[in-house]
Length: 133
Image 1 (cartoon, one colour):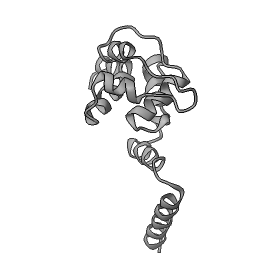
Image 2: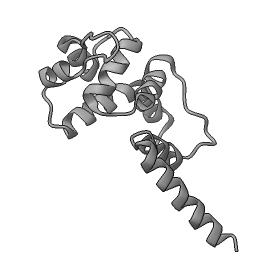
Image 3: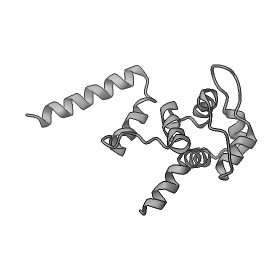
Image 4: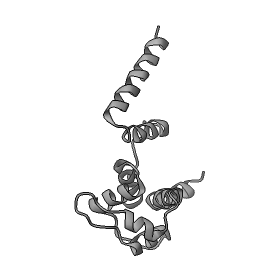
């Protein structure tokens, strides 16, 4: 991938994530707008803002209410949306020493309830214990 192509992908990281996930969930723009309600304030993300974001038009960077609302509506971890927004709107990148697989697993781990996390961590520990012998 050329440096220019990498820059383009960083410039629309958040928009691509929102568009891709909305399509995976088979939500229309209105459907996502209806589903994207901040659980704290009750505010919804406006349909027009989502449309402008997804079509590459100028939008104001999302604040914490919009990010929480989108996390709810898209059923994604808040951290994943925060990282993508930071990449697109602030030019920030996750630390390079963290692999994509590690980030993926961390995001998936956030979706587990405490009992599931404990079971998974126990499994990981048992696998590591058998490989270190």
